[in-house]
Image (cartoon, rainbow, N blue to C red; front, side):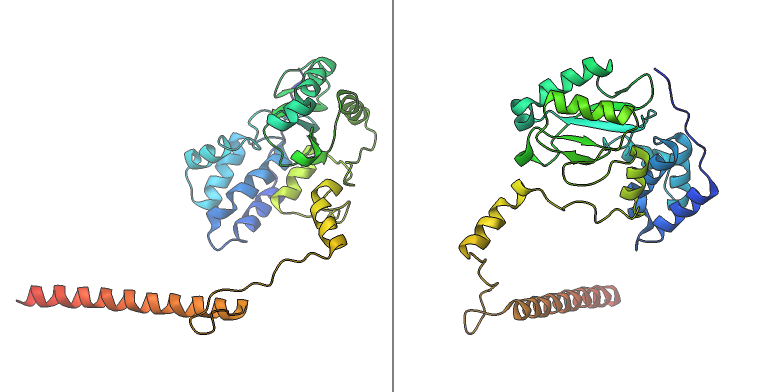
Amino acid sequence: MTEQVSDALSQTTLDELRELAGRYPQARSALLPMLHLVQSAQGRVTTEGIAACAEILDLTEAEVSAVATFYTMYKRRPMGTHHVGVCTNTLCAIMGGDEIFERLCGHLDVGNDETTEDGQITLERVECNAACDFAPVMMVNWEFFDNQTPESAIEIVDKLRAGETVASPRGATITSWREAERVIAGFEDGRVDEGPAAGPASLAGLQIARERGWEAPPFQAEGPQSGRVSKSEAVAEADTRRAETETVTEQSAADVRSEETEATDD
């Protein structure tokens, strides 16, 4: 298998890593998007990328490595141009996910989490993609491909390897795994409005409700007087209770300190 050589972190990428760290009240909260940015620049999470994140966030490299090896979206080996993930969790497996994965393995001549000889496709067996209403599903660079069959999956990977334009059933144009990683890191690519936010099966319940005139009841909470209060009143009441609790807590702490002082004086 031809291994792709990762690019060194450029000054631009380092500046963008610092920008991400500055977006959060606590800089360390930026670690997840920062690791995605490293992947977009280097094709995986490298030792260099781990060191850079650790330095910017004032963490140890061990702490960053612990995160990078915990989440499966972070890759420590070079990735192909495209990442193809086949869901083989319970429902998708029953609906044909296992067969799709096996057929792709044979067609691409790779195993799980391996990359094709031409460096175009990294195939992975993935856990639930949270699209059970479209089972079996496959993802390409984290974009959904619904209601797949072995034949449709093979057609998709063949088009990707040939450099043809591929779009998900939900409308998004497939770019590359690195470009997708950059978007996940928090840098827009101008394609945010491509395709619907949800597919027809996910919206079936909403459509039925509209056709039948069903609406959710207005928010109401129990009140101390009338028995019912509005949402804004409920929020205000919760704020008042929180403030009262904090006041009591502060007074209790002050009483404890006073008692400790008196005991010391005695």
